Structure formats: C-alpha cells, structure tokens
Image (cartoon, rainbow, N blue to C red; front, top):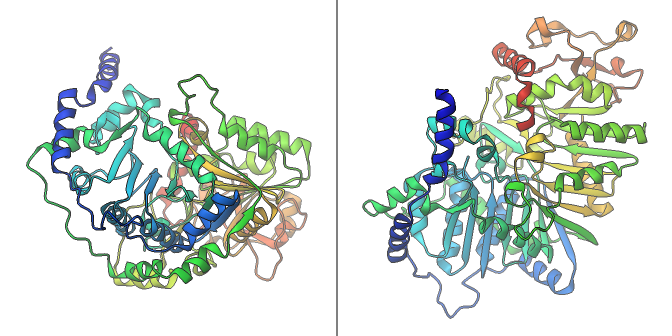
Length: 595
C-alpha cells in the first residue's frame, strides 16, 4: 500500500515539477535583459559573413530545378567536417535535432561553431533529447546567455531538470514508465533550407573518429533540394510541441540563472588534434570533391518522421505508422534484404513479417549485420539477441553477421585510424564513457562498434535513418529517415554493407553441426575459445572462416569444412560478462518490449 501511495503521489506531482508562471517570467526577464545581442558581422551584409560553399550552391540549384541529390556519408571525420563547413556557410538559419550531444572534443567544437554562427546573425535552433545530452546547469546558462540567436530546447525532460539524480530515475520509472521511456531518437541538421543531414550519428567523439577508446562505425546521408523543407516541417513539430522545453525553463537551469550572473563562456580554443579538421572546412575544392562530386542524382525519395510522442496530430489527421511503412518495403522483396543495425531484437510483428517473407520466397537472401558481444555498447540488448539466435538463424533463415571489435578493414573504415592509435599511446582519452564492460582482448587501437541503421531491398530500394528495427523504435522512440528508390544509390549502399560482413570484418552465426556434419567439420582448438565453457554447447555458435577457404552460406553442405567455431562470445575475455549475458537473456525476457 505504501508503494502504491508513493507511485500515485509521484504521478500527481510530476506535472507540477515545471516552473511556476511567476518564475518563468522572472527567468525570461533575466534572459531578455542580460543575453548578448551584438553581432560580429555588420548588419548590412546579407551574407552574414558566411564562407562560400559549393554544397549550398548545389542545394540552391536542386531546389530551383526540382532535382534531388544525395551524398552518402560513410566516414566519421568527413561527416563532422561537412557539418562544420555548413555551419560556417550558413546565412539565415541552422536547425539541429539530436538524441545525444556530448561535451567532449567534437561536441564542444560543434557547439562553439553554432555559437559563432549565431554571433554572425544566423538563427540557430538546437533541439536535444534530455536523457543523455548536456546536463550541467551552469554551462547551459552560459550557452543561453551567450547570444540571442542561439536557442536550446530539451525534449521530454523528466521532472523538468537537465540533470537527473539517481532517485529521479527510480521515481520516473515507478510513476510514469512510458512517459519517461519515450525519447526523441531523431537525428537531423538543416542549413538555410538547402542542405540537410540525417542518419545514425549523434554528436560526440565516437561518431566522428575522435574517441581513442571506442569508435562507432556509422552512416549519414546529405540531402540537397526540396526534401530539406519536409525535414524542416518535422523539426517544427518537435520544436513547438508541449513536451519540448526551453532549457532556461528547466528547474535546475532556472535556479542557476537566477543566482548571481554566471561568468561568460571562456574563449574557445580547439584542441590541437582538431585544427587540421577545421582547416579542411575552409577548402572549397576539397568540400566539392568530397561531397558534391560524389552526389547521386535520384528520381524518387521520401523523408519520414514520427510525430512527437508517436501520436497523431491535434487536428485528427491519421498518424502514419512509419515502422509499418518500412516493413511493407521489406515485404516487397523478391531476391534479397540486407539490414544493418547495432541491435537485433525482433518484435513479434517483425518476426511474423520475415516468416511471411520466407514463406513467399523460400530462397530469398536475408542478411542482418549487427554487433557481436565484443563490439556492442549495449550488453542487455545483446543478451536477448543471443537468446533468440536459434530462431533467427534456424527458423527465419537469416544470415546473421556480427562485427568484430577490431575489424581488418578498420584503417579504411576510420580515416584517422593511425592517428587514433598514436593518440591512445599518448594517453588522450575522450570525456565520454562506454556503457557496459569493455573486457575484450587488449589492443593498441580503439574497440569498434556498429551504429548505422540502413537496409537495401533487391538492390533497388534503400533506407538510411535512425530506426533500429527493434521494439523500442517500434513503440517508444520517435524516429526519422530517408527512403530512396534508386538502383545506383541502393547498390552502392549494398556494397558497403557487404564489405562490413566480409569474413575479415565480421563473424557469422550458424547452428552447430549435427553428428554427421561433425565428422568432417574443422575442429576448433579449445584454447582459442575465450568462453565460459559450461555454456559452450549451445544450439548456435559464432564462426570464423578458415585460412585459404572461400565464404559459404550456413546452409551449404560444405559450410563446416570452411568455417570453425570460435564459441558464442569470441574475444570477450571476462567470464563475468558472459555470465551476465546468459543471466539477462534467461531471466529478463520481460525487458524485450523496451529494448
């Protein structure tokens, strides 16, 4: 009864956690009277002292002529360079929407570039999900007061705070689980309604090749032309929604703001390792060669986005089910489906879809590229992937590939690979931490994880976005992305995914051999398996291609003559971590709907 009373009281008090109207007025008055408004660029200059940009020129031409152009952003550092170049080239407006923005080297550089644009006279709107982004109240006050052209809002702040204490997390889960869990997972950036960027990347070192401990292999796409305006419409849905709160109206930020005025932001000096990147953004020839020349001209594309809270608009217009739209595309496949996602936890809805797809086309190729335990940043999710491998591989017939934590092609995947090794040797460490246990075989390079979210259907339809194809993306988080009907673009994306699942870069999951297959299978040296041995004989295993052998699908009769087992958790050397995976998968199945 006491627990029930606590939950009811917390639920009643939660809406009351917002600032009183009187305090909102006090905060707004303080901001209005003290926020910096002076400009670093003469108001007579219509260009806002922006640098020239061949990318904005392409966006303008595409908009004027009704064309669509796309550039794949496969590598982290160039993707950050593009963002910084566009910020410096902006003349009117910059809108940024993201799930995570960390105050590490990349994040702080990004914020200061936005602030410099605001000081030139560009209107900058920064929309972040509250849960894993900036949480230091004093720093948020400094950013708020730094310039009137920079406005920052948080989506769905629990208890109207930037930083949650431990007891806040417990209270939020107890009183209002779904409200607390519903997050804005969208990733979006738009400049002057001409160029947009969307995909999987958040704003932090590990997404842009600057984290010496852990790097994400991720993917974005740059969009040029009229579709950027569709992206802007969805941004405004969130910006104006009642679940979105100006940061100065958060309780901890407001309290800090109403104290003695905080010191101004110190002059920003980028770390030495970021200076070559900044210099590259000024090279218009390099920007053209990197992002304009490789652009695809496509006939048909569609931007999609959930509404805030995944709810229909107030006017009663039906809310499209974007997950179903994506699943319908997958269901249209006849020859192949390639999916890449950091997580593989298929909902019942998804399992039924793939079972139907297999029934319609028994020989269809179903490929799923995801993380291994050694490469993942989310052990709880992987535990449920491991639990259902027999279903995914044996019943649905997926070719399931798991990324190695140190793929052979890492120097090609990450342009700064050699620099990262040297920086790690020098002791340079990112301010961001990696969730979960990093207990894998020690290496001089960063551990690598997969974070891109994409699929290709029959080599003709492609999707790039934020949707993870998991229950959380289906039912909790808002998502966005781009669907492209273009064979050249789709086949280029397919080649990139197939490179990721090459035996040098990924292991393959397969059922263990039966007694007859065991007779001719390549025998594994147990000393080469870093696995909790009592659980060695599961129904599936992870397999490595033997030297000198050719890749084969698991259904091939010669598969076990070409591959040898490396256990369920290769290159994970901590027994405790393996036991945790087995325990979570066995006893916490009730978590699957929110993973």
